[in-house]
Length: 151
Image 1 (tube, rainbow, N blue to C red):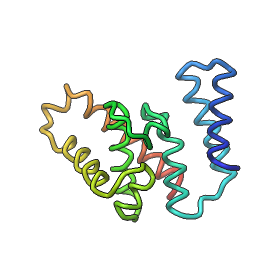
Image 2: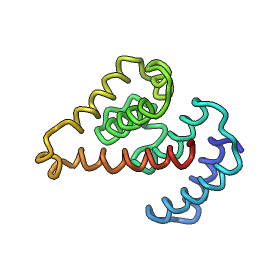
Image 3: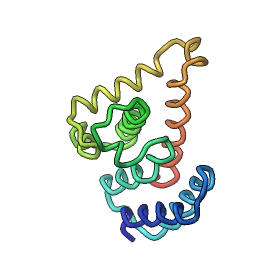
Image 4: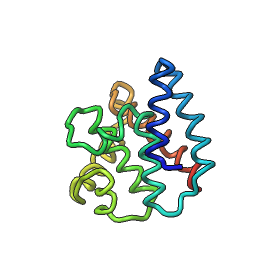
């Protein structure tokens, strides 16, 4: 089953059924498990596409926004976090990572450094920092997804 077609099917299903956000997340999880069982991911490129397709919604963005030139903070930080997690969990070059997001290697390098900077700030700042809380929560979610699907 084609992953892009599957995501369109899920989007239409959620729209037609009028699902609220929580119900939509549950539906995506269920469809994701079914889809994952039907497709066999052969290489890192397919795995990364699958990761982006399935995690973008969960971390508050869309695949389109992740790959677009939008500078809205919520999409930028989601994109940077996804780039960081891909760089830590897959053995591909910065240029190859950049191709998934329509970015060059220097932007990928900056994204990785930005997420590392967020984690390196003193702990007293973390409790009150929404950006840190967002990154920490979603980083763990992405890594759980990677472990459960690709290892």
